[in-house]
Image (cartoon, rainbow, N blue to C red):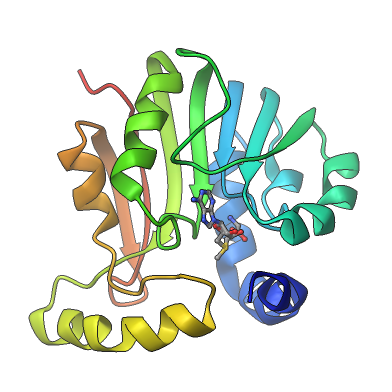
Length: 198
Ligand SMILES: C[S@@+](CC[C@H](N)C(=O)[O-])C[C@H]1O[C@@H](n2cnc3c(N)ncnc32)[C@H](O)[C@@H]1O
């Protein structure tokens, strides 16, 4: 499934990128400075949009996705180093990063609680996070519909959960969520904050 998913990912995403996701990536990433960790970079769709980072270390577990990111690594404006790794087990020492980024990724991470623990471990004091995700809707009926659809969706979309309460998980893990922008009737959310809270 991973290979099929990676082979169609950019083609399926292309109209959505043009419809607005590309603009979201640009606005989310262009001003981030310092040493940056990107989680689950996929085919590297975010790499062109880093403008001010000192460097980007990016992890992704699917080798077929990594292969497809090679051109974007070369063309990035800032140095990008990719690693085959999972968010639940990051191959970096404690307190390595000034900022952590991710887009459309927390829906797919099998153990998001473990991933958040790892994000805290590798973040420097004062580190920030910057994410764009789709999440479980707060409206009861719609949320239940997402629960019902998730098993089939997961099978087709490489493990993606439609019903992940990602912002709640960040807050429960002790990250400080400051800036939340919801759109698409609340399904999509851009959120930023401090990894270690106050
Ligand atoms: C929907 S894709 C998003 C890719 C990219 N971030 C983007 O915005 O286009 C989800 C990605 O999460 C990756 N992924 C799955 N399990 C993961 C894990 N445990 N840790 C990190 N990334 C993971 C998948 O391989 C896939 O590339």
